[in-house]
Structure formats: C-alpha cells, structure tokens
Length: 397
Image (tube, rainbow, N blue to C red; front, side):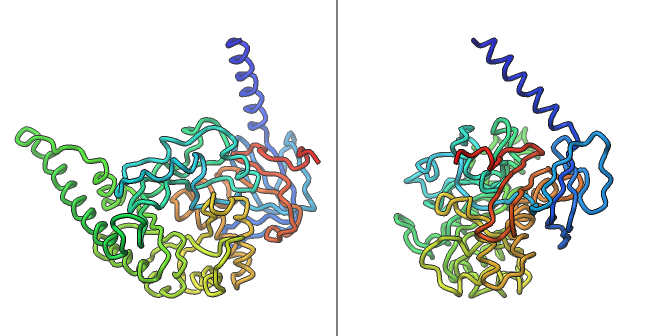
C-alpha cells in the first residue's frame, strides 16, 4: 500500500511538473496588472514554470504554447490579505493568560489540511499574512504564505511576517490603554539592553558568560534592528497616537492594522511614513460612514493602504468586496485594486514575487466573468504558481 501511495504521488508530481513547464497563453478582454495603472484591453498573459513570461498586447505566442481563450473575461492579480488568522483553529490564536509573547510563531502550528485554506483561494485570495490574535499585548509572529501549494514550508513566501502587538484596553491586566503602552515601552527598553548584552558577549566571549537567552526580548530586538517589523492591532485615535509616539521613540517599522479611527489622524500617520491595513470591512456591521471613507482618506494623504478581512471575523472571500466598498466610498478603481494586490504585497515586503502581473513574478491570477469589483461578477478560475487551483465549472449544481 505504501509503495502504491508513493508511486501515485510521484505520478501526480510528474504530471503537474509537465503541465507547469508548458507555455500557456491566456487571452482576456481586460488584464489589470496593478503595475502603475497598466490595463490591457484584449491582452495576453504568458506563463511558464509557474512564472509570468510576459503580459500586454501584441505579444508573440510561441508555436507550441497552449492557448486559453477568455476573451469575455477580466484577469486581475491574485488577491492578497495582509491580515488574517487562517490555517489553524481559533483556540490556537491566543496564549492566555500570557500577556507578552512575541516569541510565538504562527508558522509552527499551521495545518496543511485544505479545509483551512480552500475557501480562501476559491475567493481569489492567493497569498495571506496570517498570524496570532489580539488577546495579548504581544501575541507573536505572523507569516506570509500562499493559500495553495505543497507543504507549509514550500508555501511560505516570507517567514518574517511581522510581530503582532495589540493596543488598547484588555480584558485582564494590563487593563488600560496607558498601561499597555507603558508595558510596550518597558519591553522595548529591555530589548535594547538585552541586545547590548548579547553584542558585548559576542565581542568578549572569553571574558564574560553568555547572557541567558530570552526569546521574547530577542523578537523585539530583531524589530529594533530592522530585521522584522511591528503589526499593530489598533482602533481608537488615542491608541494610534500612542503607538506612533513609541515609533518616534524606538524607530521601528510600523503598520497599523484595523485602524478604525485612522481617518481622524491621517496627517500624523503620513508624516511618519507608516502604512495602514484597514477599513472598510465588507459585511462588517456597525461601521460609520466616516470609517468607510478610510481608504480614500489614506490615499489622499499619500499613505500606503491595503484592505484586510481579519478572517475568520470576515471571510477572506470578501476581500474583493472590500475593494468594491472602497470604490463606493470614493476610492478610484485603480487605488481599490492596488489595495488588495500590490499594496499588501509591498507592506509585507514580498512585492518582488506577488501582488501584480509582471514578468518574472509568480503566476498568481484570477479570472472573473465581469467587472472585477462588481458583486454580481463571479470568479471562474484561480491560478497559483501557474497552476489552476479553482475552476467554477467543476462545482456541482
């Protein structure tokens, strides 16, 4: 039985490798590249070996290429969700009653079971930044990962997905916003001191003993050295200002997540070159119109902005709907598309591989049977690494 399973797996691998090595030319009514506003009417997308070979108009198609005709459809880059919690059961997301746990890594517990991922890529989301929850002041480290592929390790695009901190009042100690901010300041100071001790030991190994290893302070020290960054769960304007002050004090790379009241302090965010992953959340109840204009306001202030779903709070399949809502509340079509493709890739430091349709990038794209942002338009196919991972025509009616 084991021998049969091995041979079958090998056969599947050989077949997929052959399919992926063939040049495929895909014709579409419109191809949105998310690259500097480039949109090609009656365009062609060439892919081979999981990568984009070329995209545009009047492209020469190799003689032996397989041609797929989607002349009545639109193609967009695979969507990216920069803030989700998928890949593991919800009970794995917060280590209660630990308050400070930046050493925890979501990648250590991600499941290969497709039930955690299938609904996500069927919604056109091909890459996510998934991480721990917001129950602690710092709950741990996220990872940038494809929603389909081989093993978890093979799917990882970038292991350093950012260290999560959560501003604002907590259910347990510390209870107040000021206490949370004070605790973070204390930990950053201790991380500086810890890093100095390690560096002193590295210079004088023969003279002093190695300091006891502290994985939590080590994680914060890597943020302060620029090897990693902070992803801050934050809602109220006063908490946004608090984390901005901490950034001023300790000079770390910062992205604000959720950012419910970011629209109240855009000037403060912009002058520090901080990124925002935020509202509107499609299908989220109780959000005011002021919040729903967040995307436009961030764009107007030159702030790099991306939408998120916070899956499982809102299902990842609504990421496209977020962009549609952004357009409804004043964003341009191009800006809304960038907010679910290239912008979240830039924020995650993976734009060299994903986020737009450009020569050399991963062939992650979505084929849609109408205007890409319209709720009535349906995703008909999804490709990741040049492989078809979803085909609507195979769904049982």
